[in-house]
Image (tube, rainbow, N blue to C red; front, side):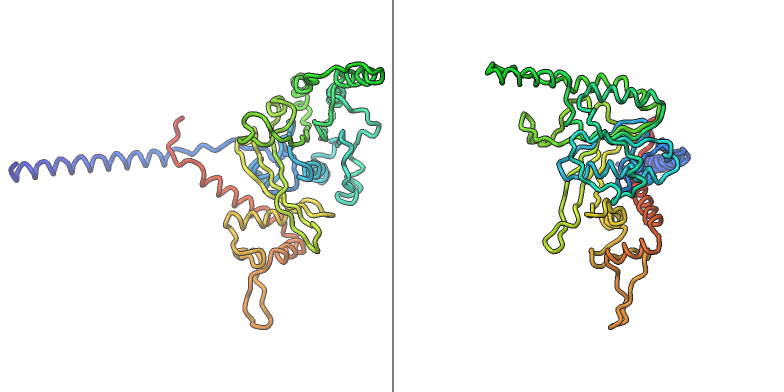
Length: 384
């Protein structure tokens, strides 16, 4: 090939490269000109608070609340995982807000196992608003359906906690139990059961009560106990809850609670750390995890949860004994050396609560969460 042809070919290649560069520049400008589509906005006035900022963010992306009015929530977990405490804290948090003044608070302790001192933990005013089933009328799924129908017929919105789904039985199961007791007394053979049909009854009830739940903007919280899966696939799903697929199908939020590391003083547990795993979220579609400590004789510790969140996500650095808050709190001066030192978690908590800076701390968490979610969004040209 002659030198002239080589130069000519190089010139042609240069033109192609230049043209591709121009096209890429135009395409980049077009993408930049497209107004980014924002995800749906969630009305904070239709959120139900739980009192845990990090949990609110994982459930709704907002700090005002976690659950959507007019829906059903399923809380699942082992004993001492914080299920009942979390549900009772919903009552306490809602009692602080004027928009829930016309709501009734209904707590149905079917297990008869609630040992919390509600007036001590949440105040007498909250305790007075909580309506319990003192006459032990609610025992079966049929009675639960009837009560929900009567509640919604009154047109008064409510927050209704069923504790727990596992403790409910059915009329068929009670009838079979009565018949078998009579047979045993006579020395006769008893009849077995292939199931009491509770999942089917629940599905039928929710198909009717679900629309009423939404129309009254009520919230139904159903607590479920964890069971060990010993069947096929147990290695992939070692834990399950009763109720079949109906509970998951009708749940707007499904949350699994598990007790994590305990903290002790003088050989006694004073803090129980809880993991909340959101496995179904029809509000934002996101699945996430939130962690919060529960202090004995205090309840859920939101301030500590916020501090731990900021440290875990890298917004703050340091250890439990010395946390760099990036200027949120001033460092202390060591008298012996005159040097500045970062404050411990306990010192930060004291300063936040003394100065009433909980709102600023919550805002920091919201800003940090929003930045995380924004960083996770695909940086792609939209398809539609």
